[in-house]
Length: 85
Image 1 (cartoon, rainbow, N blue to C red):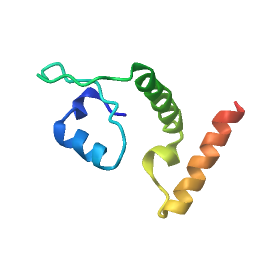
Image 2 (cartoon, one colour):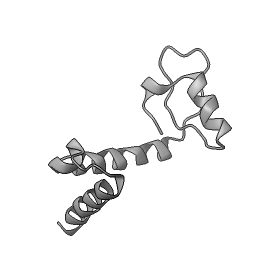
Image 3 (cartoon, helix red, strand yellow):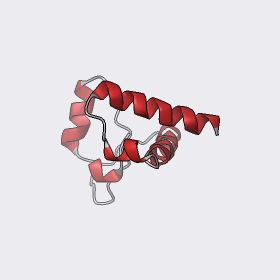
Image 4 (tube, one colour):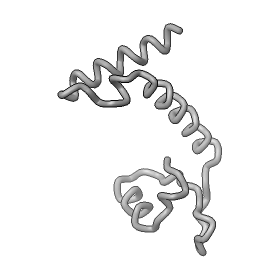
């Protein structure tokens, strides 16, 4: 799932080579229009809201952690705190 700014034939072909379906709205200037699963694209909003809430935690937003393991732990703690609210 991506924003209309990422609507390019090259990106769509790369996604198709991986066996996935591109859920990208058509750029208004595009001559050939591709179908869009509006329900699936609406799910993107939920993910964007979740990421926005996670970025309110300073350590998550600024990537202070040096290792991926520690960063995953911080993100997990932040998500747990949001879930408990």
